[in-house]
Image (cartoon, rainbow, N blue to C red; front, side, top):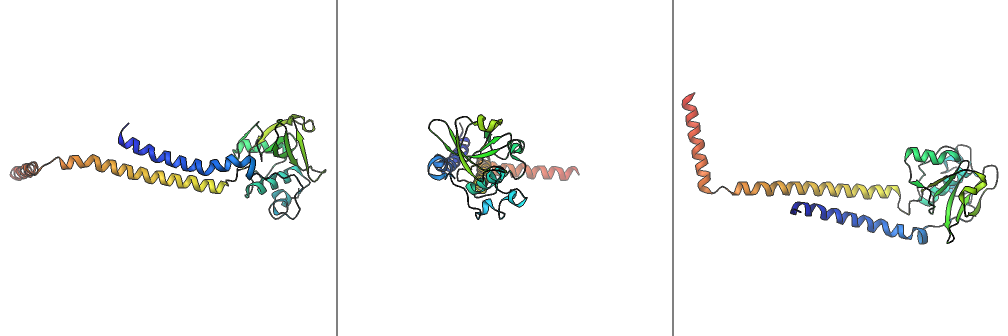
Length: 233
């Protein structure tokens, strides 16, 4: 590997290490210290669940309502508005999938939205026996409750679609974007400096290879060529 390539890879490793060090501690503790499960009903004065910040409340479908609750809970967990802000419960999984808002899958994770054909709920705990504890609200029914299921497919006999991983592990999209932008800027600046250094190092030997005698010879040859051209005109 050339010196230039070694110099190129070194800062990339440093940048990646910095990003991992910033994100990993948060992620590592997300399932323990940072995540605060909601196991009691939210007060109606909390802005995430009221007309102040809740999109579904503003559009006429407040709690008790599963999507209104899920929207408020995501807002509460992340401190920023959910990317999914429309559709009924059965639409959420596919709206997310089509638009690429959040990652999704079949494995339960804290803060994920569990999606069924006519219902959504939030994963609040993943228990040692593999069961999942969810918080939820019900349209036309209970304002809030907490349930534990060993099989998500058995929830009210509905079809289970999967999980939407909405919890950001304490790293907001805004902060994540800032980190990535800062990294890109540093990489661009480094590449510019590397290109400049490579150009200068490539030109330097060519310039310094001419001694005084060689330079005089070049000037003399140029002078003779000028005289020849003036005679032939």
